[in-house]
Length: 367
Ligand code: NAP
Image (cartoon, rainbow, N blue to C red):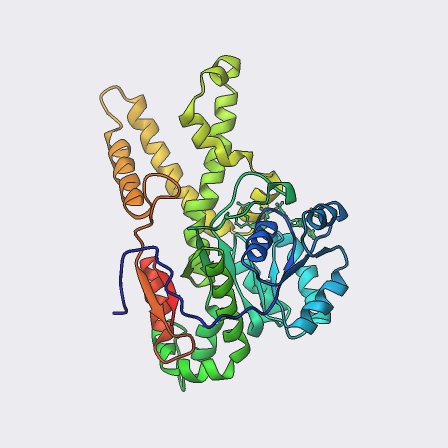
């Protein structure tokens, strides 16, 4: 087993790589990333569709443009890492533009789903220079006005590694399996044959660490199944709770206190963003929703029957929340008790290290 410790200490000893970062989409996530990277002294520039955001960002002292072609041509000239800060429906046209105007840049994204994005990337022939990313941070607010410094501090930043597994599998003579363990024997040759992808992967880990995030690796499909439960389902439950409370009328809304406020917080998110997350992760969300509906139905029948009680759900829920707090702390900002695994990108054994980290929900550090 790889190194294991309990701390949020940043392990990376990556040589400092300050090649520029080009962010497409300067909303909450893209704009906040721009703020943090600039603050850290990193060369960063970006593009946004609406001129209003470009004007605001420029007024705040950032290098922003509304000219996509010129921005991508600059990214190509400066060997910038391109970060897509837009929702899924905007990705296809940006991949077309990147293919045409930035044909050798590494690419990453911040989108809340990963399988759909990887499929789009494959359809555009960009897999050898794309690494999926998902910072598990945000607020219910949108746009440049919502951007802030320190948004990613202490948050998890998921980084995918599907491409490495696929490469390694292809390089394993006679291999019939695509899992990381069997593919690992070929990881060294995979690393060599996919230097551009590996370079992109290391750069993505580098920017996530620079803004204070903890990198957790995950394959796209495993990421989507996990976030369906802990990110997408909460949006659905918050919307349903908000509607149910609201239907109680003015008195109910006047009496609503912190349990209603906390439980409905994410219902304040822009509806288009919620739809972009959930409608692009339908299978995994339906699986999680089915489990929740079964729990609610059981609770309903227990509550409706005077000779039953709802001890089962109350006790199971309390214990589950306790396990979450043991890992994540009682409140936002508490120290995470998450294992850390050191990896050596592209070296023999590294896919096993990533797979171990994924299965433990461990943070990785590069050395
Ligand atoms: P946001 O504040 O609403 O910003 C969205 C950005 O995408 C804006 O720059 C917007 O440009 C641009 N955009 C939207 N549709 C576009 C289109 N069709 N073509 C070009 N640009 C378009 O949203 P956000 O919260 O930063 O979300 C951005 C991404 O981060 C999404 O993929 C989301 O899933 C992901 N994410 C969000 C959170 C969160 O909590 N909010 C957390 C993690 C990841 P305009 O200014 O022109 O509208």
